[in-house]
Length: 375
Image (cartoon, rainbow, N blue to C red; front, side, top):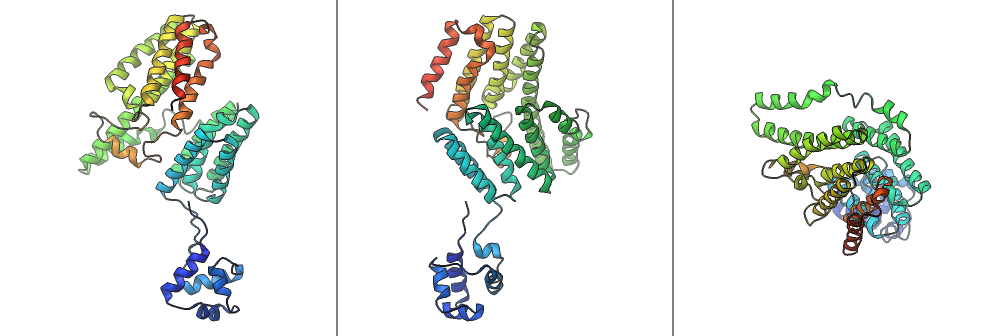
C-alpha cells in the first residue's frame, strides 16, 4: 500500500527540473542545507511550505507527499486477500488492529471501506468471546454509516446498505433490518426488471455478444439465488417435512442440471447443511447424517486446488471474464483454513445434539479435524 515518500519525491522532482538544492532553497526562502536535510529525512519542511513546494513543482500536495487516498482495484484486492491469509495464521487481535489502521489511512476510499466492512463481517466470529464479536460488528456498522453518509456512488451505497443490514442482524436488531431493507428488498420493484430490459436493449442495438454475456451472468446469479432462497425456505418450514422434502427434490434437479457442486459449491454446502438441520428437527437421524455427508463432500470439493476460485463452465463460458472483473477476481472472501475451521464448527449446531452418539456423524467431524491439520 502507499506510504508518504516526501524525501524521495523532492529528489525526483528537483532532478526533473534540473535544479540544485541551493536553487530550491532560494525559491522557498529557507536556510542553507535545509533541502539536503529534507532529502535525507533529517527534518521535514514546515507545513506552510508544502503549498509553495507543490506550486513550484506543479503537483498537488498529495502528489508531493506521495499520499494516495484512493486505491486501485488491484491494490484493494491484494490488501483484502493478505488480510484473509493473516486471519488464518496470526492472532486475531493483531490482525484486526492492522485492519483498523489501514481503514483510517484510506478513510475516503469508499470502495475499499466497503471491502473492509466485508472483511469484518466474514471474520468477526474469530474474535472469540461474544463481547469482542459485538465490538467488531459495531465497527462494521460504523463504517457502513460513514459510507452511506459521505459516498456519492449509488451502487456502493446500495451494496453497503445490505452489509449494514447483515451487521444489524448479527447484533440481534431484526426490526431495524426490516425497516432498512423494506424498499431495497421489495420483490415487485420495477428495478428487478432492469436486467431483462438491458438484454433487449443490447439486442436492438446489435450488441449480441453483450446480450449473451449479460444473460449468462444473470442466469447464473438467479440459479445460485434460487438455491439460497430454498435454503431459507427449508429453515422457515423445518416443522413441515413434506414441504422441505419437495424443496430438496426440486433443488436436487436444479443442482444436477447446472452442475452446481462444481460451479458454486458453497451454495450447495449451505443447502445440504440446512437440510441436515431440518432432518434432525424431524427426528430423521439417518437422513440428517446423509445430508451432513453431502455437506462435507461439498466443502471438500470447494477446498480443492481450484474449487475455491469461482469460474464458469462449458454452459456458462462468459462467466470467467465477468468473475475476474469482480472485487476479488473470483477469490474467496475468507482463507481456506478459516473456511475449513468454520465447517468443523458447523458440527456444533444445537440441532445435532441428537447425533452425538451416531458414529458416522462423529467420524465425519474427526476426519475434517484430521484433514484440517494438513492445510
